[in-house]
Length: 378
Image (tube, rainbow, N blue to C red; front, top):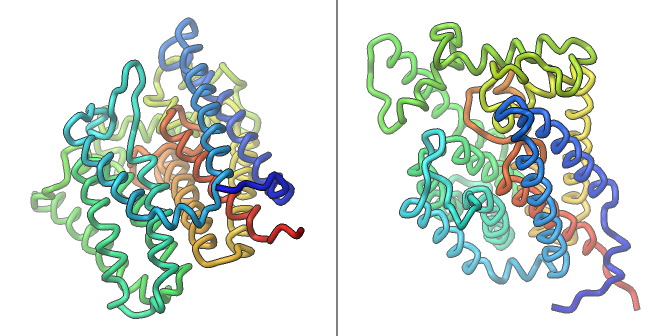
């Protein structure tokens, strides 16, 4: 390690500013969502833990900046082995939360390895793809598939379908960036999606089994198709979320004054359905502001990908953009009923220490790529 402080001159200041703006936005919204979740007297610990996670995330960013990102590429198998180990440990020591066994309790804290597993996948898959001579044939997908499938299997066994989908998206985006044709990717991806749709139809029409999907996962798929089919149970979250967002109007009902949130009608409002709180209390204006912040964040990440000094750096930035972009798309779409419920957090906004730290570490890696795109002249 030989860090030159002059590298900091090339850091993307706008990306840093937008990231911290999102974190502050999230802490404010969590402070309101927590009041509705546990009551005004018990909300402050949620805010404190969110701020603490952001502080640890800042420390992780500083560590990420000290090392040249190419050094992570040289540690590919160490990082990959650590990823497999952590995801496997969850199956032994994990704690079940909302049907998924993806948390490990360490003292008074909970840790979700799969959140960091996404970042480690970006580092290891990026290195593998950057070393491949060509990747435009179906045969070229064998090596990346052998790299990704064991990790996806470990996450899927945890009953965490949402994170499994994130792994799929990260892989697809990085493969496209590495040169795999988009039309071939569609040809591979569309048939499985059609098969899932037909499978769900057969389940609803004729009672065909959907093993190995868990009952709560099947309910989420059914709710996506028709939330009014069970409005008091599986469809409750989506319907209440729509009411929350719709009741916000242009400027919202005001922070800490959203009726659905504060009266407890909106479930999981501090985590999965945090955008519903934004829509209800800050209105259309607050929702648009948040979306604009995310768009600027993704723009700066892809700008760094386009100016990276090598393929590995470009793939790291692209993988992070794919990860954050899908999280935003799925989280926002889920609250409005246009995407299936998967329990994916909204980056920097939803309450959750592991997600916050992992997202900040991912942005730190992108900043690393960006500030090393130029050589330091002596």
